[in-house]
Structures are given as C-alpha cells and as structure tokens.
Amino acid sequence: MTEAAERNPLQDGNCLICAAPGRVRQNHGPWEIRHCRWCDFAWVWPPMAPEEHQRFHGPEFFERYYAEPIADFYAGKGPLYHRERVKKQWFLHYFSRHVPTGRVLDIGAGQAMFDYLAREKGYQPSLVELCPPVVEYHRSQGLEVFEGYPEALGFEDESFEGVAMWHSLEHVFDPLKTLREVARVLKPGGCLVGALPNWRGLGTWLRLKVGKPLFDPETNHELHFSHFSPRAMRRALLRAGLEPLEIGVEWHRPRCLRDRVLHHAGQMLSLFPGLNMRETMTFVARKPAGNRALSPRPWVRYRNDAGIPSKVHLERPLEHPDPEVSVLIPTSDGTREGYLPELLEQLRGQDLPRMEVLVVVGENRQGRALNTAADLARGEILITLDDDSRLADPSTLSRLVAALRSDPAIGMAGGSNQPPPDARGLVRRVMEEMPRRSSPAVDRITDSDMAEHPCLAMPRAAFMAVGGENELIPRGLDPYLRTAFREAGYRVVVVPGVVYHHLPPTTLMRLVRQFFRNGAQSRYCSQLYPEWVYDTLEEHGAGPAPRVPVGGRALRLARGVAQAAMKGHWVHVACRLSYAAGWLWQSLGRSGTC
Image (cartoon, rainbow, N blue to C red):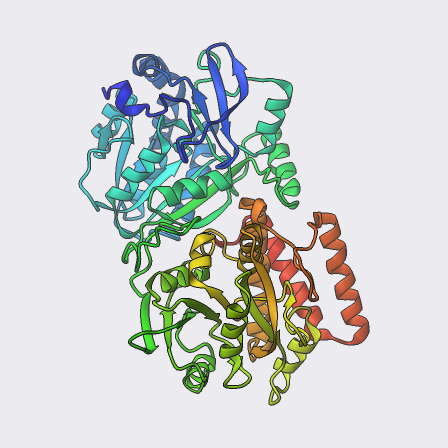
C-alpha cells in the first residue's frame, strides 16, 4: 500500500494543477468540494486515508459492481452485459482511431470488457486495478494486471502504444501525478484516450443548486475525488507534458431516461459560450515525439509546454553578424501556395541594412512559433510577418522601425492592409468584401486595433516584458497581444506610409476551409479561455471594442450575411456561413481543435 503522504499531495488544500488557493463550493460533513477559479478544477478536501479508501474496494464491492458483468461477458447475456458491451464497443472504436494496434494499458479497468474486446481485435492489453478479487480474476483469464494506484505505475518507461482511461481519472487521488506517469509509460507519439464526467455538466450544476452532496462515500461508491471541466482537463494535460489533440463529447447512448434528458439538454445549452454543460466529455492527448522545445522561453507568461514535433525546425534565410531587426515568420509547410518564397525575396530588397530573418517551419501553433523565434532572435526590434504577407515597397519595414524610435510609448506598430495592384479574381473580392481583410491608410500615427501580426513591429524588450504571445489559444492572438501591451501602458498604432498585402487563399475551397477552421478555433477559445476572447473594432481607433454577448454576435452574423447577400457579395456569404458552421461543429464537440 502506498503511504498517504506519497499519494495525497493536497496537504495544503490548494489546487493540484496550478497550486492556487481554492474556494469551497460545497460542504457536507467532513468533506469539502474546493474549486480553483483559474483552472476550473475541483477536488475533495481533506484527502481520504488509504485504509478508508481500501475499505470500499473489497469483496463486497466486487460482488456488487463487477461479478455479474464479468460472468455475463462469457455467457453473453443479461441487460447489464449488453449495456456495458455497447459502451465499451463505442469506446474501443473511438480508441482505435488514435491507437491502431500494439501494446496498450487500461487504467481503472473494472470489468475489463474493453480489454477483452481489444484483445479480440489484436491489441495486447495490460490492466491497472485496485480491487483484489478483480485482479485475481483477470489474471486467471491471461491478462497482465498491475495491482495498485495509478500514481505509481509498475511499468518501464515508454512501454505502451496507447493508454485508455474510461471514467477513471476522476477516481484517483492525484490526477496530475497520474497523467505524468501516463506520459512516462507512453512511447513517443503514443496517445492517451479517455472519458470522464464534465464538472460543468448540467447534472452537476443541478446538484450544486439543490445542495445534493457530490461526494459521500457512505451512499455513493463512485468516489469522485477530482472534477474536471474541458478547461481543467486541457491545462492538466499540458502540465503533465502531454499535447491535447481533442476534447469532445462522449456520444454513446445514456443508460436511462434521466441521463438522456440531461445529456441532450446539456448539448443544447453548450451552444452558448462559457456554459460547457455537456454531461460527459472525451479527451485525446499525445506524447510529443519531438524535442521538448527549440528554446526554453522562460519569459513567456502563458507557455505551452508540450513538446514541439520533430518536424519543426528553424531556418535563417537571411543572416547578419550584428542584427538590429529580427523578422519572425511562422509557416506550417514552408511555401504557403508560393507566397513565402516571394516574401523572402522581397525581404532581401528592404532598405534595412542590419536585419536577420527567422522562419519557424512545421509549427502549427502560431503563438509558440513566434515565441520560439523571438527567444532565438538577436535584434532589438521584432517584426512579425505571416507567410502569406507581401510588402508594398522596400521602405515598409524601415518606416515601422522609425515609428518605434520616434516614441518610446509605442509598443506595437502596424500598417494598412490593402489589396495589391495585381490582385485579381477571388483574392481581390475577398479583400474588398470581407471586413478587416483590408484597412484604410492613415496620414499620421494613429491608435488602432488594425495593428496585426501579418506586418507588426515591437521592441523585443517590451514584447518579453508583457509575456510574449499566448501559446494556449489557437485564435485571437492579435487582440490578446494588443490588450497585453495596452495594460502595460504602451500604445498600439498604425503607421502612415506602411502598406502591406495579407493575401487570402487562391481557391474558394481553401478559403471556405480556412473560415471553417477559424470558426471552430474561435468557439474553442470561448469554451476554454473566455477571459482571453476580445472583440475588435472594424475601423481605426483605440480599442478594444466592448464585449458582445452571444445573442448579439449571432444577430451581427445574420445581419452581415443579409447585407452581403443584398450586395451580391456571395464570397462573403460563403465565408460567413462556413465560419458559423465551424463554430457550431466545435460547439457539438465534433472538432479536434485544440
């Protein structure tokens, strides 16, 4: 038996994920449910003693919860058997999408129906279980079983292709330590696939409102010590060194009418930002197969610590022994429909004599790519460009640098995005029809929400002082960074004479896919990180714009679609509808955006 001091690190009652103090949400007898507002994680306090916990997993527990399903598995009969088999078949299908074959570990196996079904499909399952009768039975059936708590797994490093946690993480004393053990035993590139209740679910909300205890060992043998929301799950995975791939919805059929009502009602309420009231959720995380990082980035305030994939690398197409300006360009494929080679050629013609160019190739997280490049940059001024940007003339970057030098209060200096003279067809239509895809020129330095990453200059010292890019959000980096600079006392401006061209995809299909992805990522941020979702002005001005509730945003979208249709701007209509479809797809939990 593991000692309580080793298994229960919550001795001070603080949040296990971030160590912040929690507030009491529920108090019943000796047990409290404490909640961390930052992580949205809740836990039971004080920790249960090991002897008391073991009392609930003896022979009586086995006979009550496990004996009949195990016996029925081989007999193939009984309503409980059929219900459990349907659940585990669904989970096995879901698991096999991410772990196609190999040796796998099932933590909290219980009846182990998943493992018996997986063995029939060619997997090599191993189990982790606590109940002694269950351990003995599964060993008699030829399965490898580790008896004990998952906080200290008795397996060698990098032993498994995949790990399954079907409604088991909420039962462990120290979920973060368990996830780190999972990361240890997973092979590089292997996946953790699981499901668990949603702390923000409608059923939990109702129980809190009526005062029904969420934790009472004498009446409820579920013993949920940890309560996760989608936000808490993602942050715990990142802290454990795992890269979240998907946080979605458990789609198998609920077992009773009450659960079905709560399930579907929670689905409908989850369409609204910030509610996340689905009863249960699935999660998929991958152990990074590449380097932990290309740079340590210790100055980043919101850092994504999951490893950078091995395909990511840094290129320096333009170097200088003593650079004054460092140009940072993130790109996923190194070409971007031919735009990137053209941009690099334009950079060679800029009139900045002391300039270096850093290109981060293969990193799909823009924030982490820019922070990585900034950490390795040597110039005093950072200029960010997108891989689909074009510069209007050879003095574009020097004008940005001159604006920063003219006023130390300027923290971000951008330009005006306009269609290039040679733009034709779809590119011109998108830039002329879509809001914020182009911006008017200015005749003086103007405070504006139009300063954006496609052409943006910042003092390197100021960029690091505000904590750099937010690596946790996939979308909304521009408004987040503008807000961070303004809160630090800096101005965010657009510079006269600075014109660039941020070009959209050249085909309608790619354009629609881009807006669908943008909609899904926007919804993802509003679900997990609503505190970092900002509206932006559609014209020059000292933003940010006031926050608009979901009803207002829906009306704004409908009004925009109607106005575009009346003008005959059908590309605009298609983009708006694609954005809305991506937002709805993510709301239903069907997107893998993370």
